[in-house]
Amino acid sequence: STPDLLQRLTQELAQQLQALKESTSAAQPRVAFSTGLGLPLGPLHIDTTVRYLRIFSNMGNGYNPATGIFTARVSGMYYFRYTMHNNNVGSSPNSLMSLMKNGQWIVSTWDTTGDDFHDSATNAAVLQLEVGDNVYTKLYAYRELYDDVMFYNTFSGFLAKIRTPPGTPITLAAVPRMAFTAALGHSLGPVHIDLTVKYPLIISNIGNGYNPATGIFTARVSGMYYFRYTMFNNLGSRSNSVMSLMKNSQRMVSTWDTSGSDDNDTATNAAVLQLEEGDNVYTRLYANRQIYDDGANYNTFSGFLLFPLPPALGSLTTLFSPTW
Image 1 (cartoon, one colour):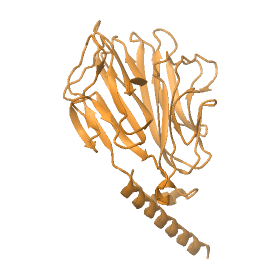
Image 2 (cartoon, rainbow, N blue to C red; image 1 turned 60 degrees about the vertical axis):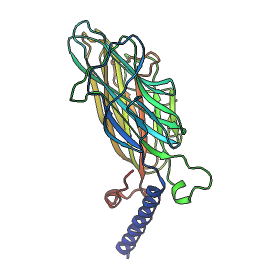
Image 3 (cartoon, rainbow, N blue to C red; image 1 turned 90 degrees about the vertical axis):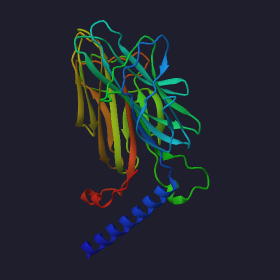
Image 4 (cartoon, rainbow, N blue to C red; image 1 turned 180 degrees about the vertical axis):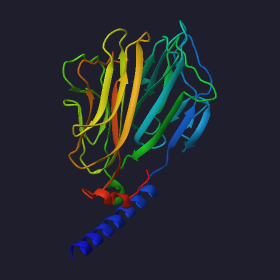
């Protein structure tokens, strides 16, 4: 009967996915870290690698608190994020930071002094690393960070997927690899209509799911995905900034920043979404709003596949809970 067939199919799919999860977990190295600053830093006269001395986790020992540098011990796809905080009272120096890979800046954050003393900014990227590659954050000369025992300034990362060399067991090699980070690199708006943001600067695009010509990520495999975007403005008395993360024309999460005395503000939001093959995800800038960028890659859009799911199982997805 149809119910029996559906039950048998569901059980078979659950067994196959469990076997895939076990084989993947056994073969994949576990690399992840999260750190905090815990004290003020700067202003300094030179660009400085930030050394986060508080270790919340450091599985795989890739992060070195003596240097502030994460070093890849295995080739693969990694996700990194940092949060910058300032308490820029009056005329004190503002804050400007970048996420760095082997001496090259990847994405940045910037916050300027103003009437609101406490501001945070976050940015992130998916990076393809080879063994020995280094990732860290840089605080620029004559800038500063504020922190205390609350740990407002943090730096985290984890290995999402190893690179599969020739000869890899089929159960591991078959796990899809979908991940991207793209940056804007120029100012956009104000425009008179709602607009899909096209991020033309490709930092990574494993699986080619993101299309820079349209700004749209299209799922090539059904599964659970993580998406995040960072919005930046330098607006003063000009138009403010409002954006949303969209799935198939439906609004998911949003950010909003209004112009004021502090010209440089950052806002970030994110969501875990269940996608079917062919679903689209993108960001939208609303009419008469604008965002600012200048090549430092303040505005970014990232996403990656957490784990695949059998297509169109609906509520049956609760049967599967792989942990990566």
